[in-house]
Image (cartoon, rainbow, N blue to C red; front, side):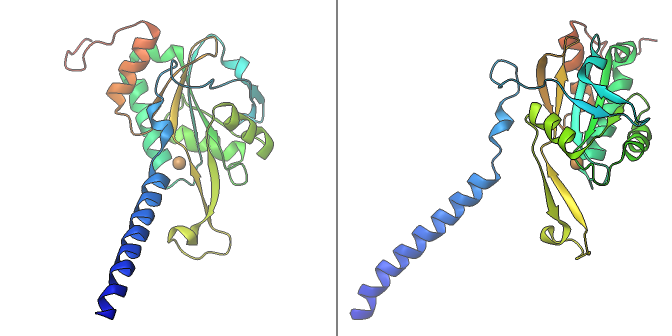
Length: 219
Ligand SMILES: [Cu+2]
């Protein structure tokens, strides 16, 4: 009798703790930014930046005026997200055909410690020579990411279950493709996992153009 009266509140307490733990895990994993995909419901994104091109030149957002920009933040050591996204951008450029001339894809490193201008330049060229790779001082990179509301954080590799290297680290980062118009105004974002066909169609639509369906061999 005495044992069971003690057991009921204990079990109830355990259930409450489990529920709280489950809730916290869900709240931590969900990404609220994922719902903001159009200019209408997103806060101001983009703005002035000063960064460094692979040849050492200083580059600002004004250098891209007159062209559409597809901006992506990442880093060359990225194990999966960045290579996948850059490969998609390359396929998208192919899909866009002549419209690709009006688009400047820009990859901005959020790991300036390892990504020197030359490293970023060589990295993006592997995917497509039409992609511009930019980096800068930690301050320049932070300011650019802030303007685009991009998030990044250094994480020790061993904390992510990797090898316990002396100074091995990964960068956690948000991974949106930001489409900016020729005046540098934010148009919309695409998730990094977007299908190249969809990305090309989305960009063409923003330009006021239509792509010939890929099934129709228009040559
Ligand atoms: Cu990445």
